[in-house]
Length: 137
Image (cartoon, rainbow, N blue to C red):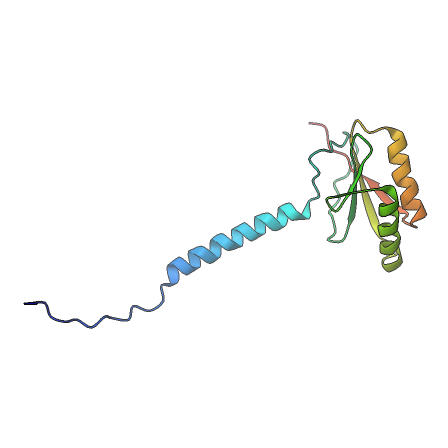
């Protein structure tokens, strides 16, 4: 025999506190990943130090060219040849005539490789080129 009274289940509603916690954690996660995604950080490139370097705020559409120590060029996390870089920069320069390019050359990169990349920028009609440096500690 069942001596318990049959209780009807109560509708508890929606628990707001756990949803707020989850939304808050998602907000923190997306803010952190967005901030990291804004920075172009090629781990294989160590830029030189300069005392008078200015820390410029990056715009969303800035083009960053990483020149590794072996002379390979990385643009948008893709290794490219100089001809591919020239084609892409030419298309960008046609759409945005004042497009800025940030050149991140490794400390051990030969000067000749940097000049080749500058030559490609000039051939693509890109005149606004900046060099990335770090402040000495």
